[in-house]
Length: 415
Image 1 (cartoon, rainbow, N blue to C red):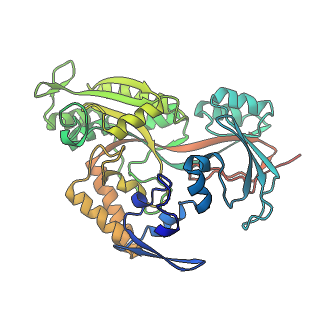
Image 2: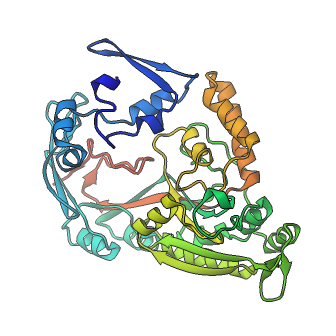
Image 3: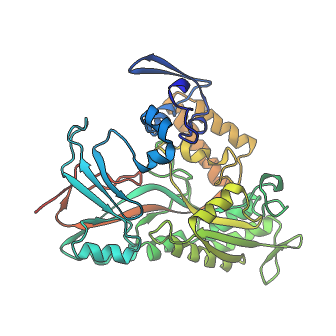
């Protein structure tokens, strides 16, 4: 529907990127659109469902920034007050087509510090908090007036390594130091995920070797990377690295990792995990330097392609939908998270599953691609997040979702 607004507003949507196989939109009548594609597209419906519909004339007149300031939708809640980075007040939409929410008014308060959130909950100033630090969850669970609930998220946290060729990024003038699969596999076998999940997350995380989250359609469990420092050193030797007693070298180049991360951004023990990861890699002889940054700086570095040739970064990858394709497309184009591009063979497998309309055949292709990606190790998987919430015992009807959202339509508070 190009003439009906899809391309009328600059930066208004990312349809061209999200749906590159859509060749034409055709209006059939006031309630029907026919979508034409250049190839079979089994993920089309998932992609269409995640794009919001907004008022065309208002958006063209006022622009995207104004739309972000004064959103208009058709959901279960009406936005009645918004104070940037402070709070938001929603009121029930009594004519919502899916049924009106249980409560009339909902206030969302921004409280960045976990300790302050928990203090507000205990004082009765708020009824529910998210991103509860795992170390606090067990303590809160023993308090009779509170309840702890949790659920797995579609959030895979990983170590990304620079494996690009020198003409594929803008810094260093050298090929990425981590272009050899054996080097990346060595780092994967140096990580003690069981200890991270037990000691740092208190069990509120999952070890997931697949590049796809466990809650996504098409997920196929993969053989874990065993914690095996001895095998990690063997892999480094096979990759041509020599143990000097002070670290590893290859052709005069030391095995260095400048490890960047967005401090205090992802919550739930991400920073602590990154620090633990650095120590585990040092244990096998990798020279690691931690570089804490704000999220915007990490984003700018990865978007502009200025990650050092001997650099990497930890980050958590979510998904725009719940289809495995959305994770597996990470290594198809030079985006901010693609630092180890698909080989032609892997790209062919990816393309095959993206075009396969038979569900059973496509699931087999997805499983095969996940196995190949596991063996190729473009990233070092760390954990999949299990989100922890705490709420007053008076709160009823709250269930964690897998999509990093919260659904309050059925939530009520007993008097």
